[in-house]
Length: 209
Ligand code: HEC
Image 1 (cartoon, rainbow, N blue to C red):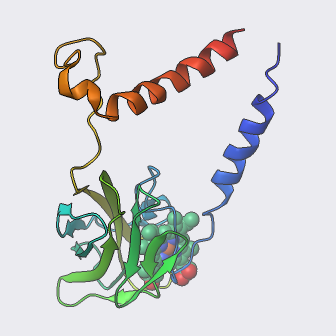
Image 2 (cartoon, rainbow, N blue to C red; image 1 turned 45 degrees about the horizontal axis):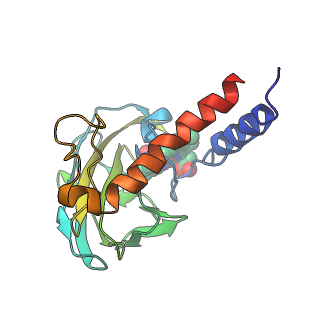
């Protein structure tokens, strides 16, 4: 039998796919590598630059960290960037030459390289609760021809532990390291972990009916 929700799922996927399709030199979202794609989807033909994301890998909850995304090599005339974080509770703040677009950061216009590198400074305000988040960045090294040829992007990511980080989910329930009681059972982590694990199970059970 046809599942009543199948049509709705296709609709949502279509919407997501359509959203970031506007490409311009004045900034773009959805290309940081967080969703598996980077600027290289369109920017081709140039040499691959190297990119680095520098900054603190631990932050106190609510604290602000200063980060730098650096592009080196490639066409290296001008460049742009896409930065995203996998927690909606974290807040990215644009530095010079950047702007906020949705929840992400991108360049305002193609930025000129200084010597062999191009730096983008930005800050990240950590969520107020403990979590381990990932910052994603894609950097495009471009040849300043106002087109997408002769350019190429590379991407990287950085894991940032906020407070004590996300609770570690034991992959083998009841297996080694499960604790099986004692202090670990008293923490709230196993409860939400079980709830999370139950979700896809419940969904699968429903679908099989
Ligand atoms: C869907 C295709 C597409 C994607 C994805 C895309 N761009 Fe572009 N980009 C273009 C096109 C087309 C142009 C030329 C027209 C213009 O200037 O907007 C361009 C121009 C540029 C330029 C000027 C290039 C030059 O040689 O003068 C920069 C810089 C740039 N994009 C940065 C980025 C960055 C950074 C990303 C990823 C975070 C990105 N673009 C993703 C299509 C894309």
